[in-house]
Image 1 (cartoon, rainbow, N blue to C red):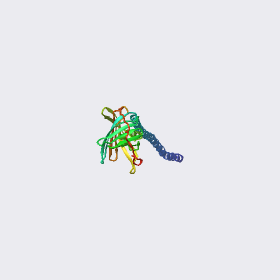
Image 2 (tube, helix red, strand yellow; image 1 turned 90 degrees about the vertical axis):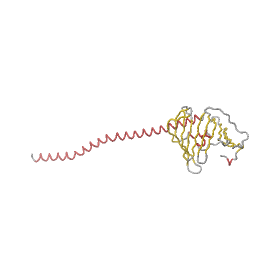
Image 3 (spheres, one colour; image 1 turned 180 degrees about the vertical axis):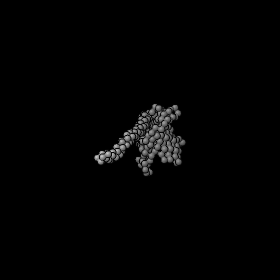
Image 4 (cartoon, rainbow, N blue to C red; image 1 turned 120 degrees about the horizontal axis):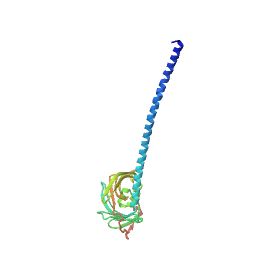
Length: 245
């Protein structure tokens, strides 16, 4: 081998040694891109689908409950309610016709009665009747059995509504939904009320179970399209403005 040939071979070897690692590294990087990019796309797609599915389920459940509240408010019905807390327990029975805007509730064992006629509410304490303008600014867990029409209005605005599973009662089957309602507490911060509502196969509300603090309240709706006459007491005395509820 002459000197010229030897120099040429050395040059070729140096060139090959310099280019080799670049080609090898490029090939490895290319293979990594082919593996990683589809995996990232799959993860992103799965995440988007999961979020959309959750949002769709919540939105759909909220729409079902809102529609049930509206449908229930279009019929007359009877209602029983209970309220239990460390301070007291009570049970009431009543009748309401939301379309006629009339209703009445009686608190068992007390002689107290409340009647709703149009824009006025009449209350009997066992001795006298009083009358004052009808208001619906009480929390839903109290209105559920004392003024269901107002409670149904609040239920339409409930948040975090989610389907929980099947529900049933005497003569009906349906679906249970959980919900939350937040409202200002007169003593300070916003109070969070959690509850469940059972909706029958006809899309009517049958049962509401609500918990706020240490107060547990339940209302049951039945005997739809019942008929009962509710009239304003003739001898009701107006409640002084400063003493209205």
